[in-house]
Image (cartoon, rainbow, N blue to C red; front, side, top):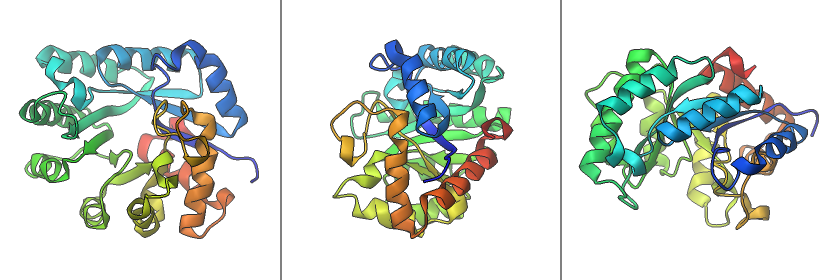
Length: 260
């Protein structure tokens, strides 16, 4: 591979497993060709931490949002606080927000209500929305069916099948994937990321989770993103260098010129 310019479009360097070593992790990422890292908020506190990391590290940017696991703790004041955070220059979108019916740490009806309010906040602020959906795609499509759509929508760590991918692609949505693409049993995910148009795909780590196969079971970090790039290049029948250039352009198209 030549000189890469990769973007990790979804990370959590503010996670307690990573934050104490954040400076070293960012440095390792840079050396591995990961030149931009977007840290997603999961609540007000972690959104603020993502912003602080972006203030310290020029390669980092932030998303402000409330994860569906944390929906029970959200209220109108939470939306107001996110609105203020989203106005800060370090923030490039609303996220992560969405629905997770696998664990149901928050009741499904609460998740849907909070998700709708934050989806509409992205519309109001004309910002990209980064979405977490797990075992709730039908409910996700139902929730947004009568709502205006944010300017850009990304389904992060996409876990749907080809039919769901087609439905989302028809709506103009983008898709990101991380280490799960490399797992032996991820045939459906590989089929999806072979099918999708090249201009709507992105790579992420979702660190500290979902380390790619060669590092599986270990604490993930952005420096390992090239392992997933190699796998995606094979899936799509292209070179790592060509794919990296496309993915960089996709990140700029989705999040704006600060990803350049």
